Length: 198
Length: 198
DNA sequence: CAGTCCTTTCAAAATTGTCTGAAAGTTGAG
DNA sequence: CTCAACTTTCAGACAATTTTGAAAGGACTG
Image (cartoon, rainbow over the protein chains, first blue to last red):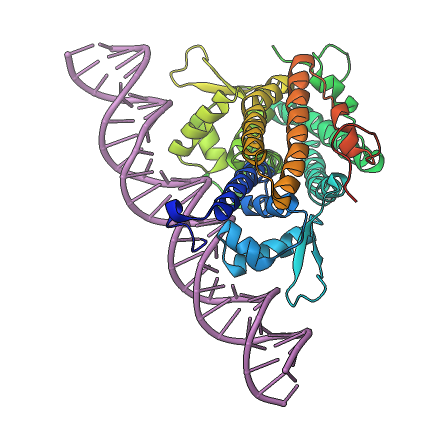
């Protein structure tokens, strides 16, 4: 933590303002951190990106460590990870010895990287496993196996739809969920195999 | 684990088939478990739902504990949680003492519950915090504070768009991401406040 | 080319999250 | 009411993840 936080009453106005700014930045960082955590990344990655995003000027690692009360090692690792995700960039500031960082501000770049490297991989791997399990079930003749196969086919069609929705999204920059219509709409259309049981 | 898994070679054909079925079920359960984990829930919740989903007949807790090698306590907690999320239902089988469970098969029901209770809450809470931070920044006059406010306003517009997209989704059962157009498309449209800085 | 400043790595510590199993609680039958 | 069958709860064990800080590794400077 910053070594200045003990004597609030005697802090000069300029520093008080600075603290207000930092307070607001941290509030925002925590909010975005929660979003990022919800998306399955570490919270600190979101907090770090936010601090950089809110500063139009590049910041050095020490400044980030200071503002977020994080160890130097933690900052280094977080920055590397953010850079791999294409969410933060390293810049060189003329005449400065240390490195500076800025936030990527192109949201599409960030989203497409995550979707293509993470979501797509997951969905593909899941689709493959469902296919494999279906193959195991197909030769079985018990009532239970047939029921399981019936439902495995539904899961497979969902996975396939998701897979192509992701591909379309990446290609066109537009989210297209129409393929899920039969699932998301009140199931009424015939022959989709996904009607309600009831 | 089931007490039968030691002597594969001497297992009668009927049991062998049963094992193949269970193997396929577990493969599917793990696949869906990964999806659910990726969505921020415990993996075991996804595995449990899947076992129920693949069985058209209701299953008792002991059967689930057995198939998933989970303790009675774990099963009980997982089933309660799944029930709260409206993803599993408790049914009474005539003449049976213990309780049985079935998977909810209406995907819309499951999705809308999660979206309305989890995503919506998060997005609203984030939007509120961004608003609050913006209020802290507004009176500040430093260059840094102004830059931060400028970007906080962009974050706010994203949060607001997300919030209304979720509301529309819940009301109409259709995903509508058109509000994100200015972000997702190559940013070119005027007056949205979310153009690229470049 | 030695010294300083800065960054990265990584093992250990701290933290956080999950699971177990025994005890308490509940339900229904006799 | 009492027992047996089943379920829930929860404290502690265990497991996974995250963070720290010290040491090693560059790289620029004088």
